[in-house]
Amino acid sequence: MAGGKIPIVGIVACLQPDMGIGFQGGLPWRLSKEMKYFRQVTSSTKDSSKRNAVIMGRKTWESIPPKFRPLPNRMNVVISRSFSDGFAHDTEEAIIRSNSLENALNHLEDKFRDSLERIYVIGGGEVYNQMFPLTDHWLITKINALSETALPSMDTFLDAKRLKEAFSEQDPAQLKEFLPTAVELPKKDSDQRYSQEEKGYRFEFALYNRK
Image 1 (tube, rainbow, N blue to C red):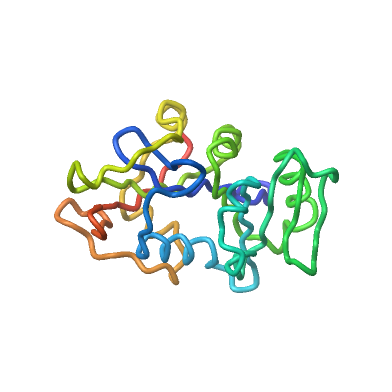
Image 2: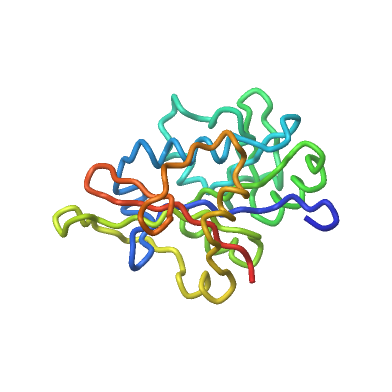
């Protein structure tokens, strides 16, 4: 990015067509192939000397099973208005706590610009909505239920209108170029999209860039 700015990337799985992203504070599905993609994308870098940060709200942090947090090989940044400090780096727990998104981003740029390749925003809904003016890209897994019986309940949604207004979907070649080589993509389908099926869902990986 121009001026050495760390690129900010939203990454989220959305149920089509309404872009549902959650139910009662958690994911309504457990798709191992999609989670593998998320893990590889957020953990991998093109520059081996750098790593990525993942930013999340407190509820998203608490929804991660304790044995899996902090998310390994990534700088974990947790946002909550309840935190007293503007920015606190707990090196023992390998996480950063911040009382606002603005404080977190400013400190990441100031303190870690040379060591971070990308900042990934990983949820939840409120944090995603705050990030719309700030993100440079979105990596969206577009999920479709293969039958009505597989259609889960949703109560949290990505703002599809804001996404469409400010971002445009790229072709699959752009997605492949954008991702580090360590990220494993499925074979292209008949529409030349990177998609696959699991547990009654069909999902496709897509990249959106700011217009």
